[in-house]
Amino acid sequence: MRIKKIKRNVTVELFFIYFLGYIAITIILVVGVVFSMGAYKILCNPNTYNSNFAELESKLSLDYSKITDSNLADIDGFVIKINSSSEVVYARGHVIDEFKDLNIQSYMYLSGLTKENKILLNEDIIAHAVLEEFNNSIVNTKNNIKYSLYSKYLPDENSMIVVGCPYSAITQPNIFTKIIPYKSLVQILSLFNVLLILLIVYVFARATSRIFIKPIKLLLSGVMEITNNNYDVNIEMDTKNEFLDLANGFNMMAETIRNEIREKEKLEKIREALILDISHDLKNPLTSILGYSETLINNRDLDEKEKLEYLNIINKNSHRANKLMIDLFEFSLYDNSDYKFNLVKGDMSEFLRQIIASYIPEFEHNKFEYDFDIPEESYEVMMDEEKLTRAINNILDNKLKYNPVGTTVGIKVEIKEAYFCVVFSDNGESIPEKYRESIFNPFVRVDKSRNSKTGGTGLGLSITKKIINKHHGGIRILNSEIGTSFEIMLPIVK
Image (cartoon, rainbow, N blue to C red; front, side, top):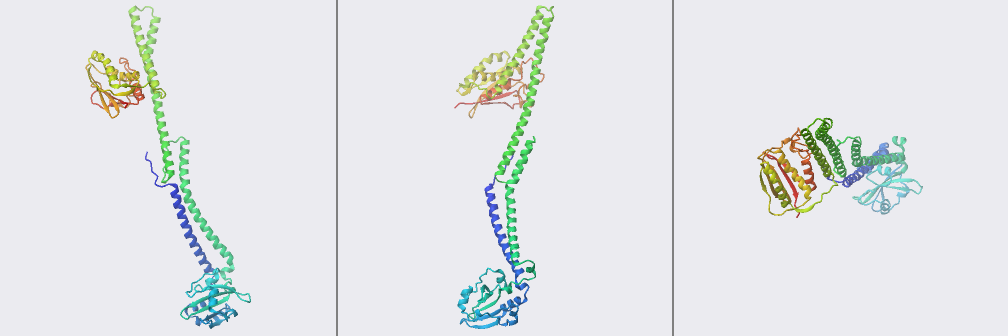
């Protein structure tokens, strides 16, 4: 199974989302405020409903001296020009008393006007929107009338222009504000900005939740599939954070469960096959024992020769059944993971020479040729001599049982890294390719007829493998064109 790797974690992803969210909210908030101010100015600006303000603003921009009293009459306003000597050198409209005798420096100070004409935004947006190029301030006259004043410094003439009108003139409701009052409009625009911010927060909240909700839903769906016994589920996740680790872990868990199920099914088939094989192998000797024993009991006319023949058959089949039961017991015993061998340090070279020496008479009796290559050096391994003898005997017994007269048997020792390796070879009968993978399984026999003449139970090599495994070693069948070769590997004690 291919495992995807993490490229970033949830913390980094959340950092980028919050960082981008902060920038986006800030930008949208600024845009929203600018839009609101623009909309407010457009909707509430006196220029949009009073042509006098529009004409007044145009003449102030081009040539203030062309402003007439009629331009100021409708708004009850005035325009004056004050020179550096604090003299009013130009006046039009209804000039209030406070501006008939005013020091230019005092006025500039009070109104916040500078010679550089730095526009100071008054808090009243409506008043400022009337003449945006002029500095705006709100004052109360001695008659307690609120006035909106606009001033601008003329550096070329070292003087200043002051435009004023009652505050009520610029706050007259127009067509739009008659329907929606100023305060309501401000509330609506404020609500618009709040909703806009909430929308952005919601969008980023959704983006953030995708990091958590979508992977969790995928994992939950996978868990539900497994709960419903669907173990073929595999979670595909496009994230590159810790949830990918969870998905990989889930997929490995699902694959482990699938493998365990397949292994369980495989073991179940092996168990069924074992039962069938045991039944088959026990049936023949028990049938013979039962049949010949009944003949001996029921037939009184048998002579001594016949009785002896029947007893020999019963005895032979009893040995066969007994050997099968012993092998089954031994196989089950070694298959138990809790069963421990009594392993002690021993010289494997000398141990192997002793076993081979005991087989030389049988090799010669069966007219077998033999070739042994065992080193003189001592190589110590941890062994249970009795059990290891049983394992090697099974291999050598098979050489004797299943090979014809004149076969050459070879036993060669090689030291491979930290392993004592023994190759048992012959030039006799070869194990077919289709049996080489399963030859160490119980009851696997090349002789499918299960010929009783060989005396085998089909458990010998299975027991051998379990014994070698209990010695922390391994056994395998080597590929060879002629005969059969087994290799045993045992770890050398350093």
